[in-house]
Length: 280
Ligand code: SF4
Ligand code: SF4
Ligand code: SF4
Image 1: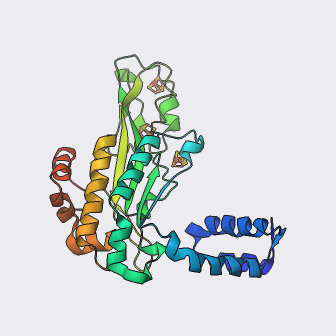
Image 2: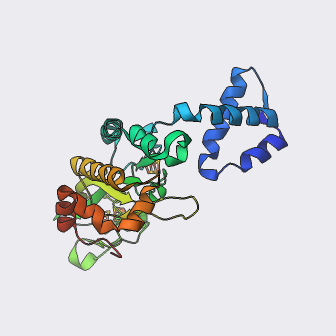
Image 3: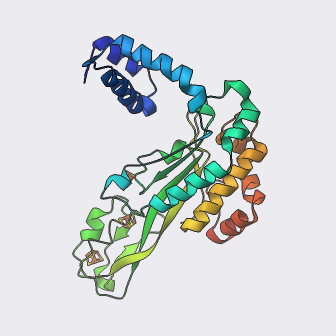
């Protein structure tokens, strides 16, 4: 669909992270009215409808995913089932009821609790700026199968985490550098590199807005059940400590991350096993 320069100008004022969605919505509404071109009036009409509908559309949480399920070849760990489980959890926790109590009639989309799943460390759905961000991970391990020193693993690793050691007959992997993308595993022709485990990395407390903050990564890789336990602990903590619709990041800045960990026996036990949170 064509856009006039004025309409494009109005769209450019929309924050970049929702611009694509707004464009799609404006075009859909214009198409529903048999329009071939989007002008400023179409953008304004969508904006007016959006503002009046906002109250009824706010559901208390936002859950999204990257384009992995659409067939992205980079998926390190498919998260379809986890997505369904988190959706049920978010519904069950009645975040809308909680936010209505806290915010009242002024409830808007920006108050909603945000969870996102990205199925590999490329993080296309921006987990770093969500209340809870989950990243699919696939970690390699070295077997006894002889390495042919073909170099394919070293070439594909963008992190310089895998390095050849022909004299030892097997490569080395830097656990500190490896982000768990799993890319080195399928390219290994000898079976020297195989999958050790799949799971999810979890980041908490990211946000944009007036005081942006990047999420903090919890140490380790978590199984699906453990990830659900972490998300549950985050939601419960958010409901116990959130005031007037403040974002999860603000709560964590006020209370400290340790208080979140101490709030859940399960989370505390997992952190004790997985290790120390960087910078904390
Ligand atoms: S995060 Fe990874 S799996 Fe998801 S769309 Fe991006 S590259 Fe693909
Ligand atoms: S899993 Fe990814 S980051 Fe880790 S060593 Fe393999 S290619 Fe590198
Ligand atoms: S891809 Fe496999 S065989 Fe080739 S260098 Fe790496 S570990 Fe060795």
